[in-house]
Image (cartoon, helix red, strand yellow):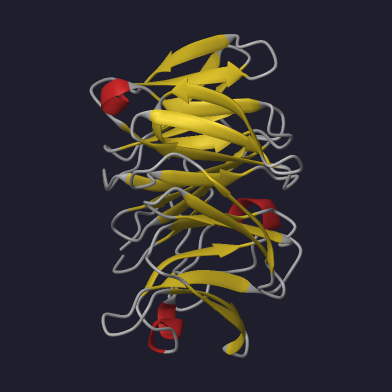
Amino acid sequence: MPSSSRPPFRWTDAPPARPESLARPVVAFGSLRGRLATPRAARLADSTELAWALCAPAATRPSLTAWDPRSARVAWRYDLARAGLFDVSADGALLVFTDATGWCVCLDAARGAERASFRDATGEPAAVVVSRDGRSVAIARGGRVRRWDLDALALTHDVAGHAPIALSADGRTLACTLAAQRSAAVTRLDDGAAVTHRAARGARITALDLSADGALVLGHDDGTTVQIAGGVRRVTAAASGSPVTVVRAHGSRVASGHDDGETRVRGADADADAHAVYGAGR
């Protein structure tokens, strides 16, 4: 049960009312798991009620599926030759998918229609991130992170790095982890200037994000999150110690999802514990 210092919230089949920008990539399938065939990953967007999932049933081809979680109505399905990774722009207009062959496809996220395709390097993708403005995508695979301009369908940057990765809202700043996930590099793509930030002591970086104002947030395998802005590091420890699987930042607010099902939302008060804690089995 939650300790007396935490609000007694629970998150079961459906999340509570959410700040749009915090919950964008975080989906709890809950009862929807029975309505989608073996979902592997899912995304939400700020400006639409649709959600998207990569489904990979054992007996049939994998597919990308868009559906309305309120009614379980499937909006469209796009069949794939093989599974891979995808991301959706913040406005819910664009979906980008890639697989191990290097094939990348851009879909109209509302209708499932193909807009364009291009070839990245081969190898299993480790991460795909579309910038919030939908004009660029970063793809991590094989120890490299490549940034593509989606207007020109042109490769603009190719840097050493590993997943997890993040792009700034305008796609002009890239964050990625370095070898062994003990540090993260934030690179301004216009001039190549890079700053390296170390992980929390003794931990590996398992998730990261860049907020709209440029703050970097790191999630770690010991459950801690670190928010770095203006040279100041704010560290928050999770009582469970469960690894952080996803982290999102919006100004001074940070939301983190953990491997044990716990979700933590922290606000601007640096001296307070998490403002809300949700968790399966708590």
